[in-house]
Length: 211
Image (cartoon, rainbow, N blue to C red; front, side, top):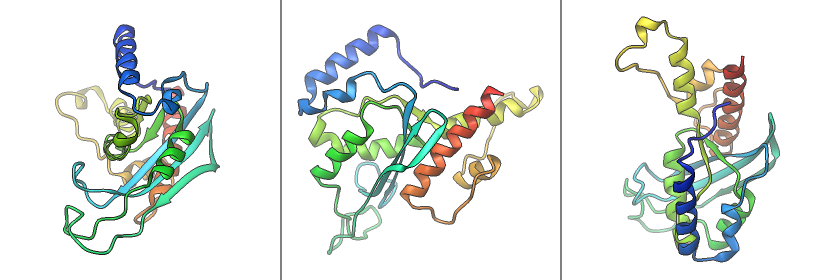
């Protein structure tokens, strides 16, 4: 199993202390607690566009993983209807209503301090951090497991040595990743489908890397 990258211990301590000083709501200090052993959360978002600064989240989904099982019965899903009017999204479409405070609080309670698993997680968390900034004042501290990066590494190791030189191109499209791992491919999957499939992909890659 590939562990998330961890900075040096002193850097982790300094970052934790800084984050806790900046934390706006002390009810969420538990996000910096040690995570439950053998638990993760698969996460996915949908957004009104790809502009991290302007676009808004239109759907969120999270599913718990315990050991080698993805627990679809332990999930959260939220979606927003579009607002009337125009000018909110980067494509000029009406801006969707953002998650309200109660929704975000329930998400933080569900996620806790567990490591987050996702496909191209950087974008998802950039959108989430922007939505959560007024509530937390800081970014989510959870360890992150990027499924697309693990898939890239797995595919790279299958190449013969002479093909492992220079810039190696690996098709990281979600449908390709799912197909290569023998997982179902769906047209235009929603946030919950993406979270479930990202979690299953990670579990499959974990098994493949252990073989």
